[in-house]
Image (cartoon, rainbow, N blue to C red; front, side, top):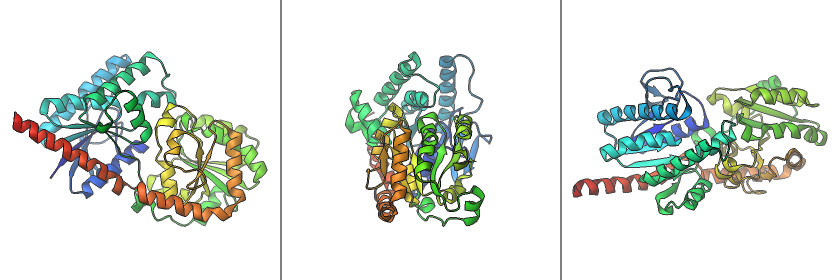
Length: 408
């Protein structure tokens, strides 16, 4: 039985798009009959034992809190601690392949161990961490830290035996850096159709509780980061409500921008048309999808959003919801304007309002568009199909490893 060790930043029971993708990958690989485990770094902050089973998945932890000191010293210490934990697990469990996931610190820790033991390593990039830092407001493009992270990323990609990325935007960027295209596979985000493929009916009690009875409901379900552009969505509401007096905005989730967004909504002349729910348990999310007519994703235009595809629009399509999103590169990989969804100009509240008002004005197109979007997800964006892209890479790396040992 093939053993795959996934080297991770954090995992369940923490909830994030990162952990949900990890869960989907590991579950699908277990379904293939592989023996799979994960090991997290020191940034995994949920309390728990050093070895933990969550949702039937086994995770090992790197002991200790994150290191202190200046940023470079702190991160080198965390890499060393992570590498030591990986080393101990590799000696005990003997994986056939090490599969390291973003950020690059995980790849650096995993590569130390993989080289020492002659284990093939695949490095999976879900986003360039320097761009993610810019997107969430903790970094600045062109800064020394940004430049260093980018150099480390390029080096890690060159040293990995194979590279996986979640979308064509990331692949194109690596190819432009001189990385051999044959070394890179695209394993896109997907949807667990067992979880999202059977939409639940709208709960009238929840509708009444949220104040959405009879409303044209626009929704966003996800994390409240600056790059998501939720401030532009809130700013679009006065124009939308003037065009569609029954329009309401439902915001489900939380994050760094939550307080600023709540303050912005309170100051809006149509504050009573904006409903904040807060975070909800993942197994209840589908009930909130059922309350929404159109899911809106107004991501701002920047490198992060141009290069990286989000997961949430796919979940919305699987739920049979209409999707409207900003016309950035990551969305264009998922949404065909006028076919599977609607695209509007980024960073433009007036464009958001016009797009949403147009959708609500013509419901005759809704059923066909929802059916086409769901069919696209079923055909091209399920985890059960996406996971097949790893298998030939694993097999190639294992074959090379056997040949190398035989030659030695």
